[in-house]
Image (cartoon, rainbow, N blue to C red):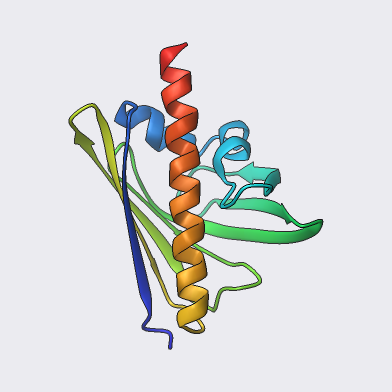
Length: 145
């Protein structure tokens, strides 16, 4: 089932540079890498350069779920591509974020490839949709400060 793909789109009411930089800032990632209510993101590290690594631990119902990856593409304000390694991913899974300016903010198209099965793909789809909603809320508030 490795050919399974998901795509999530969201328009965030924040400038494109805020959105791009948030994905590389551990302090901001701790505030939005929460795919569902009650999930806490912790132990976040980033090395924001091609070949650099990142790590995020999500605490879900008291259980630690470690996520990590490698930055494959960093095109400022337009595109990020990284590998995605988690307890629920398979080898070769990657996430691509395409950013574009939109009326009143930034449009994100997030695509992830390679899943073990359709349930895993659907769970990741819901998780990424939740993360993008949290990012929108975070940056909209930040922008208004």
